Image 1: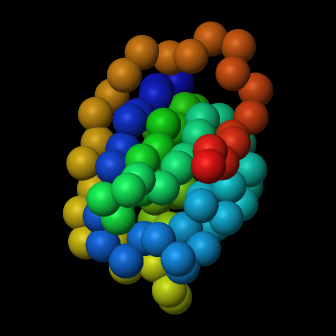
Image 2: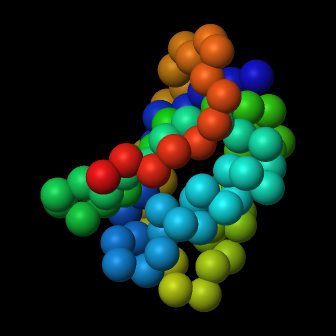
Length: 89
């Protein structure tokens, strides 16, 4: 199990990024959260199996409308007891 704090840059707002992230997190059995930032980036914390996180990121990068130009990711401590993935507004 790992937890990553990630910033996504590119065409990541107004293209269903948060919706797709929620769908992919559920599909891959991941927990965490995602939110838009005022500077046009998207911020996410994602937790689960490393291969599942990679699968989620690949799914987001393969989306027709989303265009990720940069991913800034660091590993952070696990959130014990977290049960779901949520979208923050």
